[in-house]
View 1 (spheres, rainbow, N blue to C red):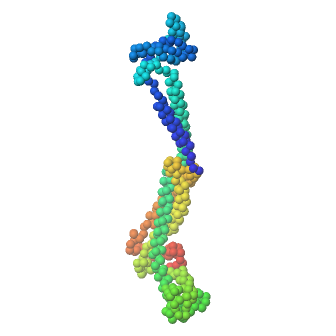
View 2 (view 1 turned 60 degrees about the vertical axis):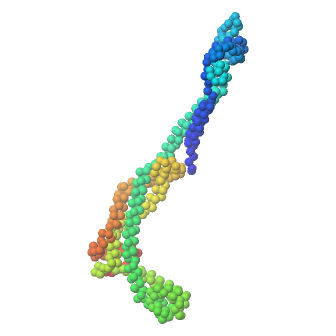
View 3 (view 1 turned 90 degrees about the vertical axis):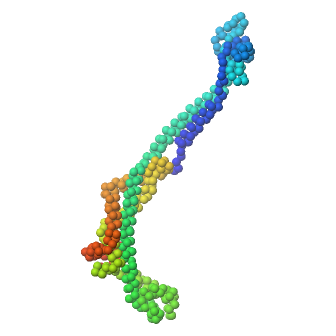
Length: 406
């Protein structure tokens, strides 16, 4: 479910209203500079409409104009109470003290109606804007607090280190096994080739389950099973009296024979007659013999643990920091919290069983070997004392039934 930034929009709206309030307040016209003067009220109506006379303080002359007097002032100031002789009243007012209207009467009530309305609107906008801003800030922080619950970067870091150690020990074990297989493979291929060179082509009759023109093959120079494999279908098909279909049948029989021979041929390691290739095999085997079967079990546990940690670390990624958790969706945050809980259990188990230390020690053991025994003398000595373990391990690593010759 995609996150909807509700409180962020509330905050944005509040700030916009505050900005509008400031703009409206600044756009309201300001009051001009005024000077107070005494007004002689010549006549006046009940609603305050009147005609007044005053002395211009700037031109020092009397002026007379309609005006809006204060209808609610004390009756004693109104005509005829104020001056029974003339029948005039009294009020006070303001004249403009600057600009082109200098000396003119200025009505605060008439001008204030529009200005006061704008100021009231500005005050309303700023009040609503401040309220929305507070709601946006407080609500957003509370929501963010709930969203970041479950952030635990330390658990993520520890789980990653454990995953790396698990993957590394599995890789080191795989490398040690491959070193043995690479040293064994050419020796094994050579033995298989020698054995196939000793098997006459006539033996393919039994494997093929039918008649093969073995005499024609022998006349064509194909005398052993090895020759059949070397020649291939196309070359055998060129031998007089054979044909392409028979050639394919012969090659298939030769391959089945080679597979059978590969299963039974044993690579021998003779300490009395060491040579570079067998020395390389013994040296590679010694690395595994020293750590077997603990290294195999630890490496297998490492592979399983790494495979289990990988999806959990992927799900827990948002919990590695506040920013990641805030950017994640609701389902991602839920999965992250569940994954962190499972990672914490795995880490507690690993700590109780010292699994990380086992991974590290096994990796160190698997990295000892060929570089520490370049001549292979100590490996051959060790082989003589426990040759059965070397052959048993070689059988397991290469998945062949090998005899303990040598």
